[in-house]
Image (tube, rainbow, N blue to C red; front, side, top):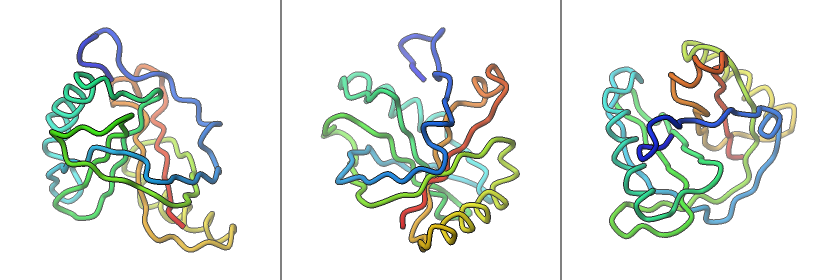
Length: 158
C-alpha cells in the first residue's frame, strides 16, 4: 500500500513463501500503533494505516515486501506493528524477537476462530506451544477483491 502512488497498492501475495514455515526474528524493528475496535471490528484502521505509512515512506524506512502485523489483544482494540528498516524517532518503536510458526489461510475474516484452532493444531503437530499470536493481513480489502483471494497469515510465537 502506498499513499504516494494511488494507482499502486498491495503486491500479489505468494502463500508458498509463508505456509507452514518456521521463522526466527531477533529484534525485528516495527513501528507500533493502536486501532480502536468494537468487538474486534476495527473503527479507525484506515486512519492508523494512512498515518503510519505516510511517516514510514517519508523516513525512507519501507521494507520490501511490507509486513504489517496485528495483535488482536482486546475486544476494544488491537496493536498494529509496521515493519521498518530503521528507527523512526517520531513513532513508538517495538522490537519483536522469537521463533514463529506460520500458516496461511484464505477466506473471509469471519473464519478467524476456525483459523486459530487450525493454527493451534498445527503447533501441536510440531510439538510447540503457542505463546502469542499475530495476524498478517497480506492485502487491503480492495486488493483482495482484485486478486480474488483474501490471504491471512497467522504467526504463532512458540
